[in-house]
Length: 138
Image (cartoon, rainbow, N blue to C red; front, top):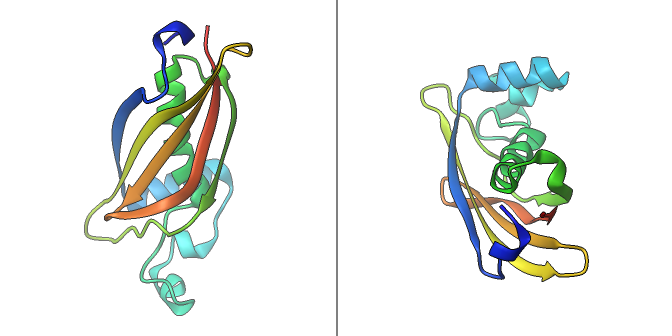
């Protein structure tokens, strides 16, 4: 991707991710986040959750990977931030599906950056709010 070929309204390729309980265990091992709400159904439901939930940073990472893949270089992502608005519930019987779409909101010619707005959903619900990335393009 390069700056000249990008304009406001450019859509990033959409992505669909399936998360299983095995994925949550692997992420917990890799990240060191062993909070039982991500791993133990009894504990998750005891604190009012419908089931175990994906790690917020895992969900954010999936969204960020869409931007990095589109840019063609993960170091092109200058900044990325979001708010967590709803959990990604991961039942034991089937994977949870997270869908990510993105659109270029703004272009800064002098910095050769674009701001990307991401829409991240699970089961028809937006799970990340104000998910935005700034990407510097060649």
